[in-house]
Length: 426
Image 1 (cartoon, rainbow, N blue to C red):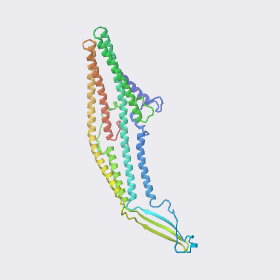
Image 2: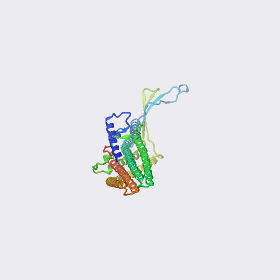
Image 3: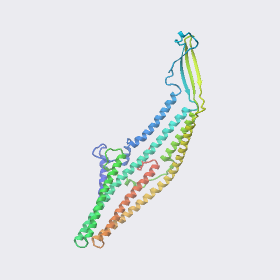
Image 4: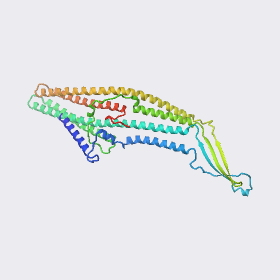
């Protein structure tokens, strides 16, 4: 009991020092409050990879725009010179060209290919932005769970320390009773065994805290692991949140699926437009050396797609669109079910936490009475050990209920496009 109180005081002191000390202090590796930590993780690999996907989509859109602007004319319009003979000459004079052709070829993309490709690029950017927002929400949820996991590991250490302290006191009583001849030596051995087991559990809890802090540090992009936390994220869940109406269709998973469906539809349009043949026009100037003045040469060509009508690419794009539509429909169904389940899980987790608190109060009273009865010699040691075991289980149930509450709140916040602390992810 005293160990838990001491842990709370140390946690509060660490939070105060983290808030007052400069953020770049080398000696302090205490994790800042969750909202501040999340705002500092914009350069972590997970987030950087998401931003890179959006930048890649924008780069592709830019390349499509440039290709559509410059594709109608060559980058070097006067790229070749053709020499031709207009009429027969003696062989001795055929080395002298009679005319120079300077052509300029221009391809006209018929059927709206340019607008279709630009629209497909825009749809790709929208899909990448939707995936970026959903990915950052997933990351924020994982970071919150890692933060709470480190806090739960710290609280398990406090519970283990309390149990070791209580077992030590019980062992002192058992030794006193054995020395007074009121208990057999076996009871003292049982108490010592119980104490050794709890000490081993304490060391295991400390190792698990190190693991939890290392995971939190890795998710936050820190090369040096955190050594503690500056706030209690679980205590922030005690206040019942005010959930407004939740629209499942606004969930990021639905938006991603809809954006990818639109991008697939644009891709089908592009492939259909590519099946329309382009019209290539040629305009050139022919400089005649045997006549006075230049001559203008013009021509036009239209390929006839007898063998290649782009049917394979069109079929593949349509199949991708069909799959995207199915995934969008599944995402809507899952979002609706997830919203209903999320609200139910939040209520169930709150009720479970309230019941766990009542169980803890009962277990604490049971252990107190068992301790008094054992010291008075009115009950055997086995009853005291059982009461203390029940108390340890009740403390663990409290932590399990807190973890369930955090998971339920985090899932529901993600459906709303928020972090667990209420910040919007744009």
